[in-house]
Image (cartoon, rainbow, N blue to C red; front, side, top):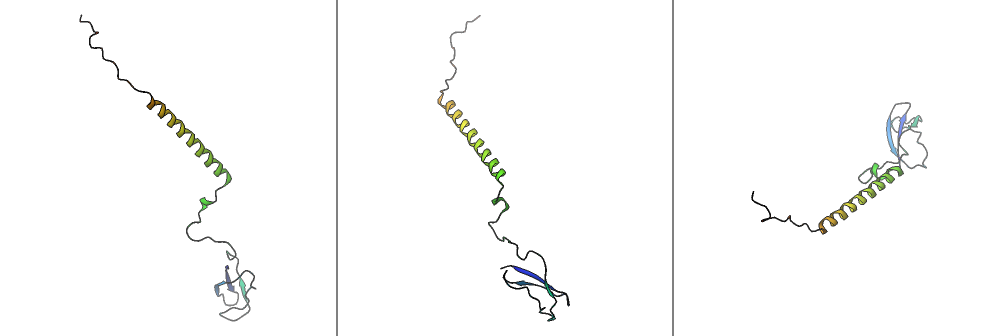
Length: 107
């Protein structure tokens, strides 16, 4: 149920009233009891999210979702390539260079 803002044209009294959408607009001012009350335009019927869990980022555009999916795919491809390169390097045995102890001639 929305909250509506009312103002009396006779006395200037302003207040908020919590009432259903299908309820009739109030006409009688509670302060001066005259029939000069009118409902003000505002966020009365607007949907307002309050609290945690309602974020702007929860409802991203389609272009953002496609871009994020493409980026995720490219990252997973590059990481799988680097993993395969790492496996091929580690599978190769590195042999230390041979030392030639007696092949040098004394001149």
